[in-house]
Length: 236
Image 1: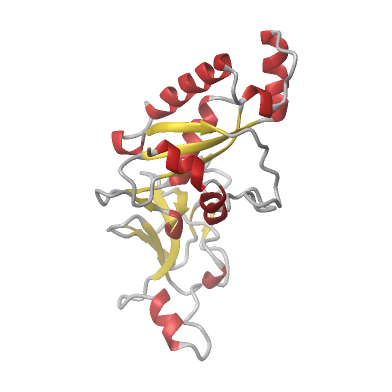
Image 2 (image 1 turned 180 degrees about the horizontal axis):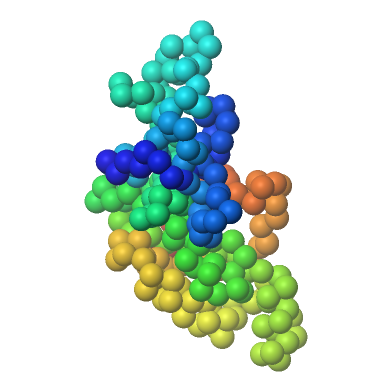
């Protein structure tokens, strides 16, 4: 475990009954959730990457629910937040993913789908949403949707008559561009985390819809069920 007793932390969860991590005016911490709150609060990273917290701000347990309390706390008093995180040399915490969202391939490698997906979205703005698939699979594949506004700009520049994501999903030129973006994203990930195959879907995922929550998070199980045929084809 990596342990930080002072310096930096964020609002980890309501179970801390208050902020566990904050940003400091004189600190850097850009892109992080802050550093641990001074005054006795401690944070550490478990062997599996989970962020743990303990201290005076952390709850004592769930009222009249010893089973849930035992699930949340270990024998050393650490609250298991459920967040996969990293702590940099200055004590600033970056949340990588939720532990329950991790995918584990057939070789037993733990991977954060959000980290893989973010790398792809950073590589190319044409992509709207990315869903990385790989739990209990030999390699990672991805389902992609296109951003309608970016598609319109791409179609105008390429001289295409139909700028809709449905039309562009099968356009060879756009697929070549997306392929290059995937390769760029893969160059930032370990070999096991690299996307080996992908499918460009002709649909647009809307917040509050079947695939995306109102807060822009992927509904992973419904996606896996709804696009089972497309996923199966990527592993075929």
